[in-house]
Image (tube, rainbow, N blue to C red; front, top):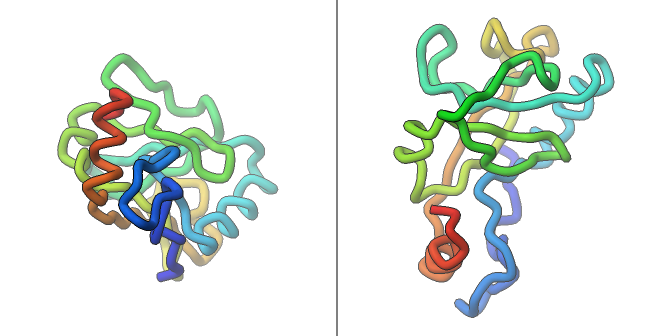
Length: 141
């Protein structure tokens, strides 16, 4: 796994209040794969799947190919591309920062990176106390 810099995502290594706490971020490997897929398909969007055919994999679509609705939430952006999650799944992941990563192997059959020999994968880490307080204070959880 390529590691994101999560030592201080909000800019507060000493426990001070963070400046911002991203709820989704990406590793260098994920950003590299994202760039290759974007070069082939244009603007993208991600949707954190909650099961069914492709398990709980993050799905990469051409922007607008998947219609999001009232039961979906924009979690943030990775590499400038929107990343959505279903509200019900968000409740499950609320205490964790989602980390988009990439690794070798075939991915989901509906996700655009399918033919690249790599696939996107979701990882997570728990928020620090300071990050959690910031998210609460800013109405993000």
